[in-house]
Amino acid sequence: METAAIGVTEIEGRGRAMVALRPLKGGEIVLRDSPIVLYSALPFHSDDHQKNNNCYCSHCFTSISQQPQNVSCSTCGSRFCTFECQSVASTTSHTPWVCQALIRLRQYFSDHHQPLDLQLQARFLVSAYNLARVSPDRFRMLSSLQGSVPSQPDADSSATFLHSLISSICPPPPLELGFSLELTSVLLAKDKLNAFGLMEPFSEEREGRSVRAYGIYPMASFFNHDCLPNACRFDYIDVAGSASGNNTDITIRMIHDVPQEREICLSYFPVNLKYAERQKSLRDDYGFLCDCDRCKVEANWSESDDDGLEVDAIDEEEDEDTSGVMDEDPDEQMQDEEDTDAMKGEDDFPHAYFFLTYMCDRKNCWGTLAPLPPSVTTTPSVMECNLCGTCKNLDQV
Ligand SMILES: C[S@@+](CC[C@H](N)C(=O)[O-])C[C@H]1O[C@@H](n2cnc3c(N)ncnc32)[C@H](O)[C@@H]1O
Image 1 (cartoon, rainbow, N blue to C red):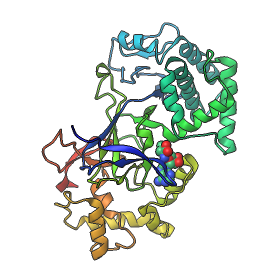
Image 2 (cartoon, helix red, strand yellow; image 1 turned 90 degrees about the vertical axis):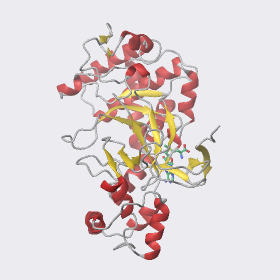
Image 3 (tube, rainbow, N blue to C red; image 1 turned 30 degrees about the vertical axis):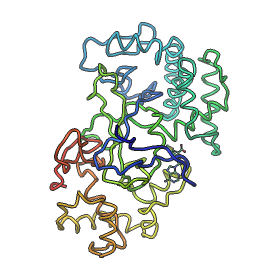
């Protein structure tokens, strides 16, 4: 039997972390994870009619706009892809309390205009308090994830507002753990630190990435962040299909080879973000300052470097022959380049190799490329983008 690929360990200053339990190959799938809690990314109410017209299954989030057979909840109107999905939902994600809570919150948000963030936090709280009722074991998993009572007054004011809203219009049925402002506040902090956005299928016309639903995944929540990640997340929404029951599962795939004991990290946002944007998001949203190898270099850049150097350096690099380097560990590759100073502007920009090799260059995508899993291809040089799905041979990269 093959040894497990990754395991959870504690790293000082970083909390729990995922590490390689054996040498890992680029393209290897190191985790498949199913969500413990899911919620829609659509507002309860929006002036945008497209957004009000929910065309996803409320349980498995498969697109149902093309499915004439879809069914609706006779009480709240939520739509489901099939009777089977609706039947499963009636005892899990769409219990009578959720149904009533959705009706009342929808009414409240159409009468009182509130920002999208707050509406989505309300959706999360309904899903989380419902989970506490229908699956105490999964709720305990959620409770064990990173996230405690926040210190920022802003976060506390959202919790206070949402707690009082839910208490007054749709209080949950009695729960073992109770229903308190402190629990609401802690749950919101866990959502903020651990939720993954399940993306709409890619479209070149749409700027930015559009999220269909948010999910919290019990194992994937242990990956720490690095601005030059060695693994990335793939989801297969609308590809897997509701029939397989895993439309909302995610997989984590290695971007390149890593040795045993190396920490496996994801990037919490698209890798093209600038230093200041990354630091702000990590400080404000995740509560830490990043001092990864890339940040150490970019911390010394002037603002104009940050604006222009990445593109300049990539253009310079594009003239070089990068084929045939994929069999090497890119970390070593970068180290070799550092040692020999083979790359122009190397001291300032040692991560040019990463951008050239692993960043998708399709318009408006900004996804990350990882080799296809060895089980899918016999050609290790085929790279797939985790957002738009484009496949490229390494010699095209
Ligand atoms: C999704 S959790 C990752 C797992 C977490 N370390 C734990 O113990 O459960 C995100 C949190 O991990 C910590 N974290 C993630 N990446 C980090 C990094 N590069 N340096 C320090 N802390 C990090 C931060 O506290 C962040 O809010």
